[in-house]
Image (cartoon, rainbow, N blue to C red; front, side, top):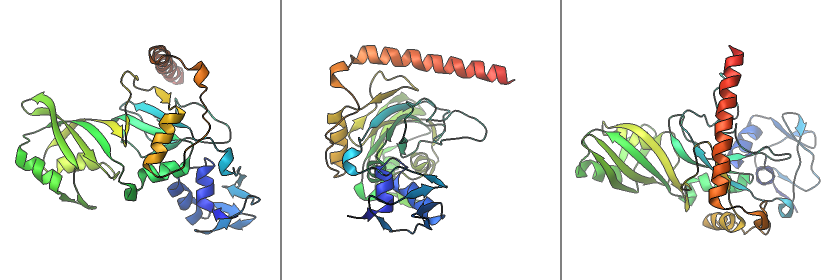
Length: 286
């Protein structure tokens, strides 16, 4: 049986389907010695190379879907490598052999909060695709005068430079005077969309935190820079949201599961150690 090349590579952990399609279009992928084409189908015996390196093709039954919940701090970039050697969201993730972490969407450098990572590029693709209408929720602090008429405009929709956009919902969440907090939801992942929507009303965003992606909330108590792996029931609930079949196996062993309090205490120690190592490395580089 044959399957589409980008679907097989995404499932095997070589990137999201969108990333793989970009590489195919750029001629960076070869199948059985020939430059791959978009829409090409392959079988289990195909020899696939990305940028000259042969990659492993995994049958669907051999792939274990892993998902991480990551609490991104401000100041980290959503890129694998930065020419200026600034910190990235991939720096602290667990290392893997034969697979790679695929980010589900992005957060800009000044935005913190929930970021999901998975080894299943097909899952990542569906969670990001506009057709799935997966809702994202943000806590946002704005500076400016916000009245009911403005919130109605933002719910109804405004014109941005890349097309119309709107919030699904806006709920006041505290604050005084010109500095107020709101919780907003959207079902798209366009670049800086939440900030641009507020800026269209001449209101400045001073803090932005993603607190939910789909039905997955940012875990209370998970420290900034820390990650937690989702259990098999959590992974399958996430897969069900985007009409993917349930997984039968998990990377986690429930027999060795620690309490959340103990696990988060370990994460806090690890993130503090990581920050210290970074500072010492910078000092040595000067």
